[in-house]
Image 1 (spheres, rainbow, N blue to C red):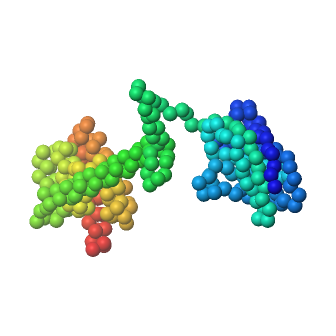
Image 2: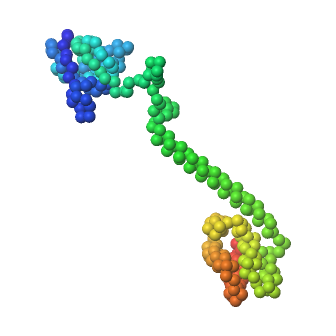
Image 3: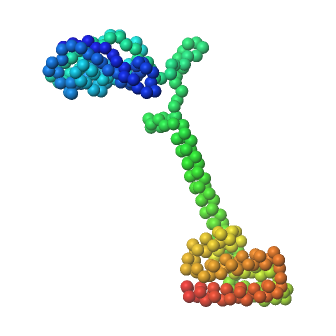
Length: 276
């Protein structure tokens, strides 16, 4: 059975009126005998060479919705459809299909230039260039974080190795008391007192105090001595007060503050004996 068909292009907002483009649906309005043909089961019959030329969307008696992927001026043609029992020949008049792609660029010699790449093709997956920029930024941030972590680890190894420079045959508290007795004749210069207390802390807590900031010292002690909550708090306050006192030294204030240092050392030694 043969049907004579005319092309009708439904209006779609945003597209040119009555202009057929690749992938735009169009209707075949057909006339002819279709008795017994089951349009609900209609399928296109295309040979392998032309199987991608047309695509049948929906078929009813008198109107068949199609899509074409051809471009340019199409000569009159015949398309076959079947319901698995009967076949219909759809005679389609000549028509024109506009490509949605821009016209190819030519150089001065008239040779067509290859299209510019869109994004990047990785494992046959295309993505916009903005995705690549985001990926590179994230990768750089990850690398920077790993480098920073490696540098911090290297720095801490170096600082830990310097702890050996403060080793002594005397115990940390005995060394501290000995040096403070020597400072008695000099009225306890606060900077020397601060240094001797730092050395005591370095030896007793095994913390590279001279190479760490106050916040890094707190984090280090929290990690290495998690149970010494009260001692960490007192130590933080003492170190802060000693730093302030070195800015504006006062002999009377130094004498008063020495008692706090002695109390801290005594409590620390008692605590450490309990942990050993």
